[in-house]
Length: 454
Image 1 (cartoon, helix red, strand yellow):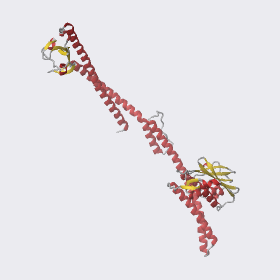
Image 2 (cartoon, one colour):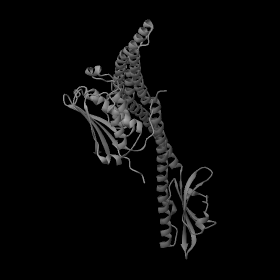
Image 3 (cartoon, helix red, strand yellow):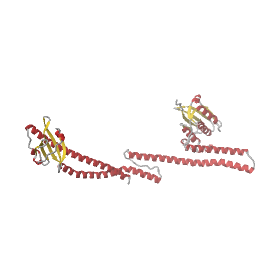
Image 4 (tube, helix red, strand yellow):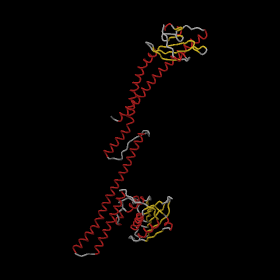
């Protein structure tokens, strides 16, 4: 059974329950209204008899107050004083509360009929002298209500049928956007076209929220697919580059081994070349493993560290890196008192990556490391006077596997800056770059300051 049918049946069931309840309550209200009308008529007749007696000290002609359905009796506790001629010899029951002086309305039954009875005590000196009883046969009321049953039943069934039809239309209209979502999802699955969207111009209700959520999900999937495709393309480019770069040192190592085997000598220069190429391959593999661990969600424990000694250590190690430029540091003395939450080895490695990158792309000029406060943290900048980064390459410098074409002769794997950005993020910091071609570049590492909770 489809959801639309179940929804229509639910609406119809609820409407049927409401209609039955309304019909029962309406029927009861009509019955109550008729009873109230009968009681009012009984009361008027009984009061008229009582007033007539109080004025004339006699009982009025009771036949004038009775008809085919109304009966009047004046009585004592045990005997009838007078009654309307249509009553004959029947004596109404006398309720116990009436004997105590209370006006009583009751529904009684004789051998053939139900009737409504009012008993009015006529008091003298606070005690009942006699009782006026007026009765009305309820057969007329039963006839009226019986005549109402069929119209009420037919009206209920007609309205129920109309409600079922309306419920089907409402359920069908309510399900149309959901069916469109289902068709769109099916179309996306069949065509793999994530640019498809569900058209919707209805109100901003639950269905509108569903359509909006589905379209947002498609937006996210499309963006994810685009990024995934770009990542796969980048990785394919990197695999091609890495294969080429790994082939070169392997060719050198194999050539030197063949040379020494054929010559039967131990050539120290050839061994040095082999060691250098092996070290190059080791570095490349280490970077690949680092990014693989980052993708697997690996992190590292952070602890409060004095930042000054770490920057000084990184700058000291940077002196050993190959470079042909002047290397300067502008580090304030207050840097030694700055504390960050970090990992000693990784903070040094981030700074070394930035300095090494500056050395590679600055054939002449200067590379300067400086530090200073910025907002609620501290920024470490590595500024060079090198070739700079072109405007089209600048948005991609932190992407893994990305290297501008002109930098292929500079060595490296294209993973250094991606690794540095990932490590900065683990520290709660960020890495940014400003560059102008022909002028130079400035890489900025921002780290939040650590404040002692105490």
